[in-house]
Image: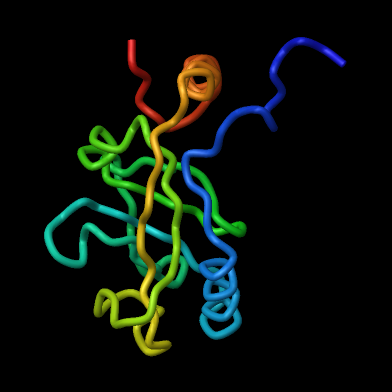
Length: 140
């Protein structure tokens, strides 16, 4: 065993609850591959939105935070600046979500919960992102 933290020791920026993963799998069965985007805009834009892969175009101002159950999760760069020190926890609750998000007809909506990274987690994550080829803007 080495003393160097492995990639498995790097905290993930985005994770999902079991309920969210179940819904993602249902949506994938219905729509094929899906992806997520959270822009930070008003109303629906501040919720995680689920799209069929290719139905939402990401651009230079979008950051790939990671994957949840194999589905890419992007966030707008401006929104990321507010959330950079937190781990996003994608959950699902009853109710109607964004009108363009795939889960609407299921009577469910995705919801972002969060927690602040602990000091040791933040240090490992920061060190990793400074050396890895990620789309995450690095704090200097």
